[in-house]
Length: 222
Image (tube, rainbow, N blue to C red; front, side):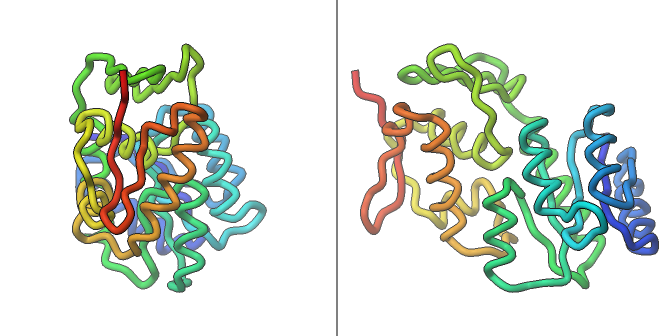
């Protein structure tokens, strides 16, 4: 059972989503706009957020960006827009998955459960590579002793690389491992997340090596 924050200004849609999440034995918190959503997120421990883009006061992109400064919880964005640029913008701001209206609430629940499983089924020992330290139990990452804040997908990418040092991953393999086989986006999503992950790691981002026409690998030299 998880605490799920549903941010949706259309009451009927909000109720439908909450009903299906509750069928999955989850506890639901609801917000009608972005400002209320951030207050709820600040004052309550949340495991996942379902976030509409078009809302009054503060849109979903802004909420996603601010939420990422507060938490690395998984975020699924909802929108009536289905074009590629909107999806890429959502991922740039830290969204983990994306659904375009109209959608199946059953599929939304399945996506939520998949993200929650991947968030909770992690080992607890601290992992070290170069100056990077990663603690799966708390999802905390440190570089040279300083904590850095990663989005959920950036964290999962780094975790995947660190538990498989030297292994070459194609973009398709990373999409399947981290976003899931039912992911609706493009392989460019991987490049975008790797770019921001490298930036946040600073000099330690050099350990993520790009292989032309092959993909990526994580390499730490002695």
